[in-house]
Image (cartoon, rainbow, N blue to C red; front, side):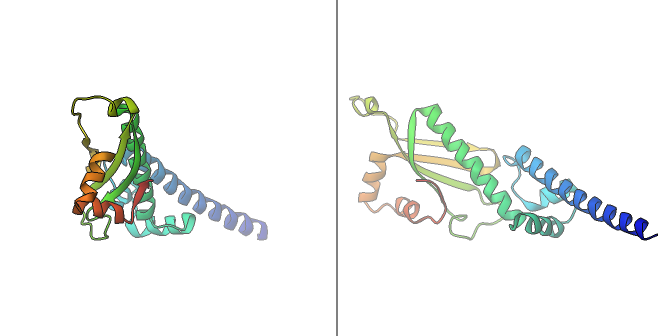
Length: 178
């Protein structure tokens, strides 16, 4: 009887841990698959068939982070990947990239987008050409990620004029690249 109780207790504890890990594995998998479309805890908890509170508890127990922190970290990684893609696609080097707007200053609403702003440089031959060239890039990605960047010379000209957005970028608490 003691052996049966011991086996039963051990088996139930193991199954409970496996189930918990299964939820977390499914959460991480769904996050990888859907991060470009969904960045809210409710979506992932509904997908798993558990409450937001329970998902948050699981994340805190296993990762010592809230589910929202994990989502934000994964989205930051996605933003960094997009910045690297821009570098390769446009043959530029991004020197500085930050979050601008409501998310940077802690007053984002549920429908706030991600305002990623960056300063970049071109290769030397771009600067040696006589004709005027485009000195900014803008792109809106799925999941409301808004990428916009200025070439370094343009950024410095605007900084000299005390341009408010430029000053905001330099004081942003969320820095993606520097």
